Image (cartoon, rainbow, N blue to C red; front, top):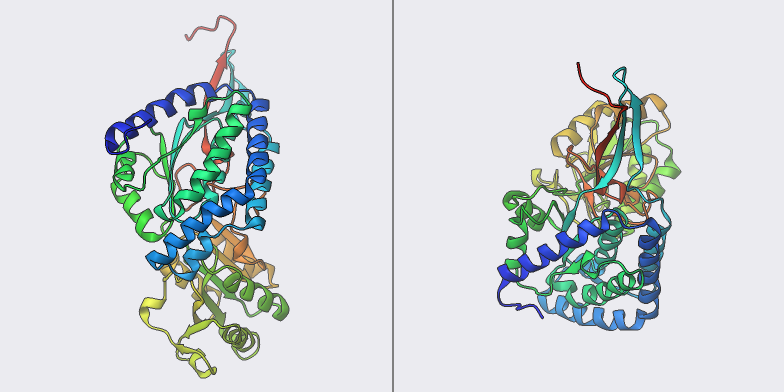
Length: 421
């Protein structure tokens, strides 16, 4: 039993166990990893009621802390969401194993044959807030990619994460894989986070998943490399050539389906030529749906729109609030996104192929979309089964981080007694 009061010693022990497990996982058979994830999904499905009971404790804790409705939504588990987590585990299990896959190979005139193959990163540390499903997503993706993982969930999801973690460990046990491959930090003490950020000899990469405060802290203080996005300041640009039906459907879904996720739309940009037609209609529909639209001077002429301030541009609300403004043309939209965006996800609504191509080539967000809701900015929706987060940096992983993105590579070089002249 770990001494939960001695945080440095506890984290060192967890880290060393993870490093040892990672050495085994690096060559674990693909079939064993598949079997572990399927067994974990079966265990989670069988314990649905117990997980919901654990989640009820977390919801009570969240209410006492005064969490926002969006945060409470992130925290909530019900039978449907647990079934979706199980589906995610099974989807990851069924994917091709990335480890050992050949990325490229070639022959050299010297007689060398060179292969670049995928290899695990080693030990991944995941620090997250109120979403208990991250426990399953991160555990599954790290296992699939041959990495050991240290999970440090938020205080709000403490009991839910523990219940899900137990199912993951049961899966490892069923497949005769090291149980230390998926470890959970068993304390709410924030000192554990500080320890993780400095464990350069034991953790290979940190993935923070949560709000701006958490991610900013990790990016500022981590000595371990970080995959992260700071904010999801998601823009939708309604072009002059937008289809009215598609625009209405996409904008309403992107803003209102789930306001608390990082793919939720936060700013609407409307081409001036579309203002009196599509623009008016979609803004009125947003107001009627209960969205507080904070608009520029031109949009304030629409009933229900309230004035926007400078602080509204580049703001992540995670709520039923949307900033909106009129732009003169597509280049005005691009300039606005470059200034205020976060390189997460941005969308253009248009039937003009040239406009879409201009939008795609002149912006460098991790995800760019055309005529599709930004709520699709999710690893599961990209066919990855799950994601460990959305990375907006340009080094290594970018966009949804799935199993393949949690790998590095090595070169395997063979010769026939080859010597260099």
